[in-house]
Length: 379
Image 1 (cartoon, rainbow, N blue to C red):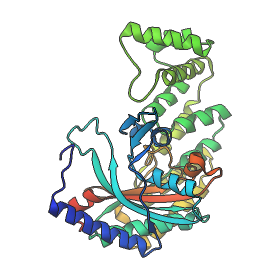
Image 2 (cartoon, rainbow, N blue to C red):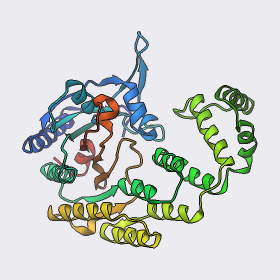
Image 3 (cartoon, helix red, strand yellow):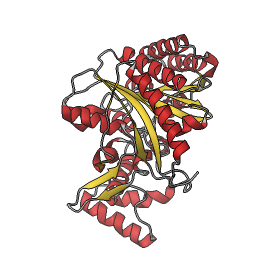
Image 4 (cartoon, rainbow, N blue to C red):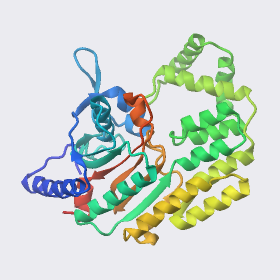
């Protein structure tokens, strides 16, 4: 692999041949091709994608001071274009083009790659939309010459339904949902709400308790300067202050019952053969006297549909934590793997409203990593 790929004539021919097969498969199902700009406003990605994508996005500032980025994926710009053009709904849109991402932990990994995909926007029947996109994904990889693949599925609705069913204060429910996407931090938050902060943090949090934003900012800045540290990754000083003030408030509040935490972590730990995993969730819900019947029935129906497409049930895995790296996902998520991930997608019902639609619009889509598909034997 190289950070800066060079495509020679045979590589371009193979990519183009595969792209035509994928686009023809999409077109056969009524999807029309569109192409968003490579340069995009940075805010829509930095605000909506989740930290995993934010920290890998190439950003720049134009001469007028606008913050821009190279598109790290094509779903958000396709949706932005549909919103701004007031496209009639439901809209079936597809694409093929380059995406760009930094690889901070893999300096030799490609910084650009080809991505194809399809987005189904505004279909009110969400179950039908999920089935249509999964069917399209499976048909497309088969059209590209890949029939040997594994599948992972999940549903973020399980977590939301679980949190809503637990006997928790409303502000804790909101906090847990808001930070669910932050792998590592979410687990830290659960621990802090249960047992309090680590001893080394208590002095700073005690100093911040009851302070206004300006004074808290001054105290945190002084502590960072004294320790020779600076805000990490994509977080600004204000974001660090906000997080520490939340932690200070946690120190003064009553703590979560450990039984509640065990229910939450028990659900997120569920992973394995899909039918077995659903049985485990059903058992956990019964033990905790929580009603998860609706998301369980929805996932069982999806598994029926996937198996009816000729996918071996033994090759379908369910993971309750799957999908936490993309903040705009709201429900069903899935990926296909043939050695490495070749396709992935899911439901994102709040994204179009967040980028300007003015109302909730149901949406679901799938992206294909075409170079990975070629490496897996696709054509």
